[in-house]
Image (cartoon, rainbow, N blue to C red):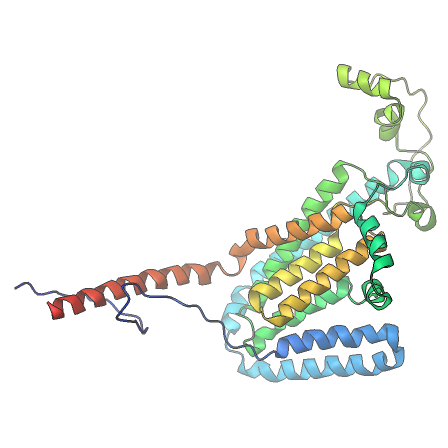
Length: 373
């Protein structure tokens, strides 16, 4: 009779159901107390008091931040993941530097697309037709007045989403999310930098008129005439369909522009529509980070704030609807793509544990089978 010899493996301390041939691996998140969600809702609600009661806002906001700071500091001596935080410092600093460089590049692109065509173009060019704006105006006529006022309210802004992410990152002190917090921050900043870089390349490639045509006149001293480059390659063909046909056929700028208008020294501004919305991008990245790291009812709350912010961007004509729609799916996709910066180690470890559990299950079943045989 052959004896079954079990290899010398270090078996994992897991339990198995003997009636099943395969083990089932369940990754259970720690039970959420709801404290992080309460902190997020409290922050947004108290900050909104600036519109309802500035006096109470001045009283409650410092008190809220003091409470959060004291509670966080009290947890520092008991934090067990400082080694992983220190390992993440380099990636966090690198992500911050990358973010700053992309912001500089974006600023240069914003100023170029506003000034290159001149103030006369801004005044003469109508905004693009936006069905999203039409839809929101139509809903104002059908929805209850209270609902419309909520949709119009400035409940959430860019700084709120940034602070919500800060609250999420610091919650590692309470083991609410998986450490390291700096690793999560590095992924957030790196993803945002990639998003803003793609955004800059997108809006500088094709200049789109602002949804607020008075913006350049009111805010910036942009020259009335276009840049020399636009005078040569755009102005002669802007409204003449026959000239456009000739450009397509000859593939050369053939028009005689004569003497180009004076020395071009614009007072840089930023009033064109920028595809896609940077505000909505930040909001989506915050929601994705919150959903992946914490989840629960507070994640749904953050996503509601994202949708509210997006519809208000359209309603107030800070952006066209397409800018907000593109920002939402670009933000989601970028967060998924850059996932290797934070959960990759946990994922690979999970795969190894999965394989070992399957091996252990089969060996256990084989041993039981030999015993019954």
